[in-house]
Length: 101
Image 1 (cartoon, rainbow, N blue to C red):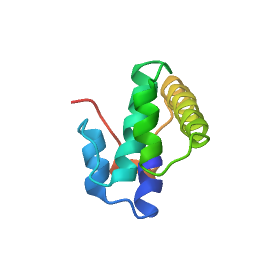
Image 2 (image 1 turned 90 degrees about the vertical axis):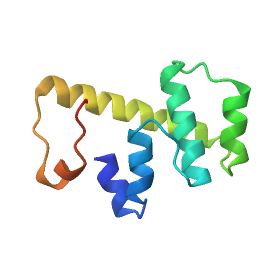
Image 3 (image 1 turned 180 degrees about the vertical axis):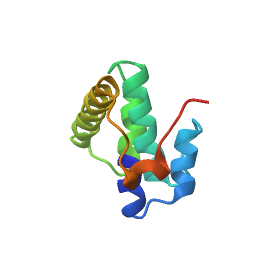
Image 4 (image 1 turned 45 degrees about the vertical axis):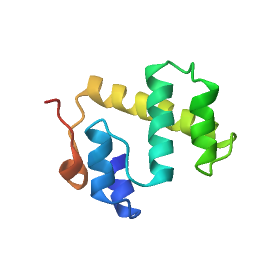
């Protein structure tokens, strides 16, 4: 869903592909947002001052870190629930459906 919304908001598909490929987007702000999100998930919230500095130096505020944490939480709950329930992917979201390699 989030990918469909990102595309609808004008995020280039190349930026989304970079994230899916484990790379950082070219756009500085998207790269900082992606890096912080990845760090929060991989480090289970134990991000470093360097992680925070990379995020804030791209133009984000420290307060916006809570927004990223909230997004990670909502995405985790939604994915877990839909996976457990076996909810089918709606047609609108099928073009961005991800499957493991």
